[in-house]
Length: 279
Image (cartoon, rainbow, N blue to C red; front, side, top):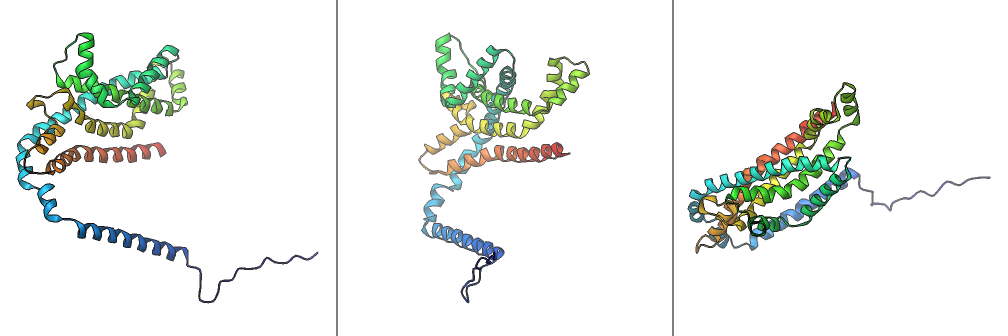
């Protein structure tokens, strides 16, 4: 029995197959050409004189400068207050979610699913107006209102992050601690939770960034002039007769002053924890 070799595919003369490296280079050239064409079209079609008046008005930005330091500080205060509440409550919820008591797990699950499923806007309005009316309590401090409202929402996300971090700690660590005579609670506090925090530090930093942006909802609770945050300053500037949309860029730049360093910190923590995890 004789076998015949499969026919070989031959390309017509003058049509040689392009090498992968050359094909990749050609694709990059085409992508850059498309990008340059889009940028050129945007530059050509934009009315730059109108953009200068509406978006980059130096006088409008200068008028906002006296109020920006206090507004920036208030935004940072609201963020730190909300994160403190969210972290404290999130640790409790994470431990309840991992508890052997079914009722604790059920309560934590209901809380987490509820606050992850509703907008933070509703929580802010509830804490500022609905809860004081319903329960006859009075919350005078805007910092307390912002911390409770945003912290309650943040706690749901922090709890899930911490739960994942705790479950990521090898069980051998707990067994080793128990073999040394530690109780389960002591092993959890001294061994598991510190390692879990190291694992979840990068996503926890991202949660602070999200909280910083969520502070833009605080103005709905009613603000005194000394309590204005960045978003309130920007809204007031937009309502003036001059300046156009310059306030959006100024306030956006102020938010970036907070979020960009936090983003760099998150990436640094990712690299640091990743290196420790491999060593």
